[in-house]
Length: 450
Image (cartoon, rainbow, N blue to C red):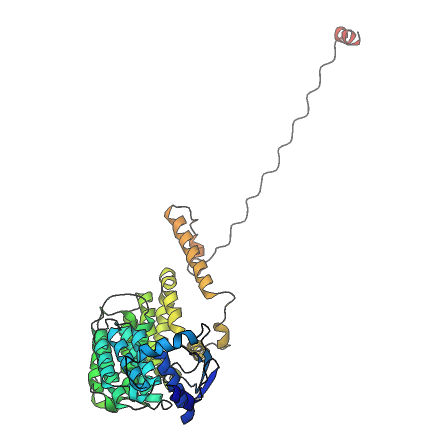
């Protein structure tokens, strides 16, 4: 260890920097990471890449603030139980952690990345076999998706650490993909949007797009599974939308599209089918919003591409415009949070293009950007409208709401007729003259004077 430390130029108690694009920097990084996984104190990583797709190529290490001199020798003696050489000891330690790790996705993904950081030689068959077995026991789709995304990023992009296109990682990608699709098809019940579940569906799409040559699962088999999930009424709405978006993104024209989709119309997706499925959920606006979230995450490129500028009535946004316009006020307010969440997956520029489409559909001109701005927080406006509706319903239930006149209800069918002129008032009757007062008697006058 001391000899390797001298070669790498790491001084105890002083900061260290590793340039991952140079052989010396990469060697220094692996040396420090091997000490870290073995629990040998000395340095803590303050900055560096966090995944295979992270465009960071420099690591910065700081001295351990808790001190290291009084603990380092004992930690080195304990690490020697794993092996005489530092790379071998790190490999054995990681394999032991893999056996002790349960089905926590963060722990599995972190364990895999630690193995990559410690060097390619650490990716032993025992470690990868243990990780594959642990993936088979993970019961949650989101957890498997996190492991799949981490492994796929390393397999696709990680040329810095030298594991891009590594066949050992390809086997782990294949196992995670099988497990994710198996869990997706058996998932039933539940409401609301599960973001981890949607990230797993995105990882499945990316694996089928970019790692198809190393997969044992064929794309037609995966599309058949997505077709069944999209048509399953018991599946969560967001997962059904994601399954339809998966089919659409893999069978549409463009990079990574299925070249044989024309020969297999059962798996191809048309805008008519997407609009038809949206109309089927028109009576449940909250479930419609969840379904749209899954669809938008997986097939945003297909929705905002040339199809958005098409003038046909099969556009999904035209169908949604018709659905939302016909919703009663109460149903609209109940489904508004889910609908707003779904459209939040579009960046501002694409939301502006959607607003332009809606203006053109109504034959109006104006600033589409102005439709995206409100005078107050939209959620606050929605709560205020919901409160007003609840108060009105309560007053109506107890008969306290004033009944509107027929003319106010339907002014076009009941036009106001001119009021008749007022009847002339009769002239006032003359008042009778006042009665004369009787003369005062002398006796009364004398008594009054007295």
